[in-house]
Length: 239
Image 1: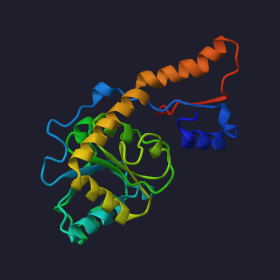
Image 2 (image 1 turned 90 degrees about the vertical axis):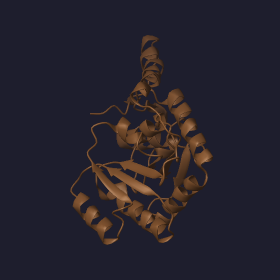
Image 3 (image 1 turned 180 degrees about the vertical axis):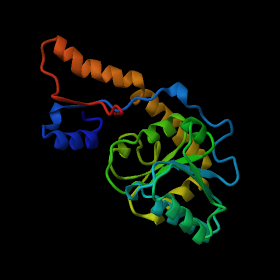
Image 4 (image 1 turned 180 degrees about the horizontal axis):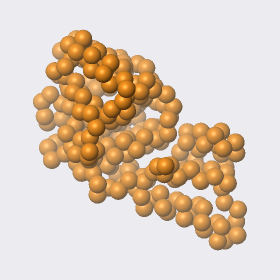
């Protein structure tokens, strides 16, 4: 699949087959499960950024917290809401308190409805430091018309194009994260355009209907036509 080069290469190495033998059909999302904020993005003061993931080293929470410490040092008003759980959570709570950031950073714990979480924030951040596939949370945030700040690891750039649906920054770089946050804060109209562009991209490429169409067109139809399909279909379906 030329649309998703990272995922195609990653799975070809995992399955030990040529990339041409891989069909990539990313997890599709149900657009109706998500809705945009009732208020215009960045109209709340201070603006609120958010992230959802388990607390693990590869998720990059430490760099995101450091980025907000930098923003605080510059007296730039911004809040961060972190949803998720994990064994590292107590350590991050203590670090936030030690840095004096408790009034800026909120730990939301497990959220029963990710759709409701997205409606409480103005932009979504994925600060991962290690390669992973395309996080479903990115697609959910885009479906909620949120601009996305993501690190350039794994499959994030298969959905988010720098300057179009959001901003792409290097991993393990809190200064780059802080600069990206500042850029959205300084250009709320541009941030809203990114959010709308993200919704358009998800609607065209990452719905359940699109996932099903890809599998039918590139796998089952060749079988019915007597053509040998790709040996492995990477559907990204949850286990």
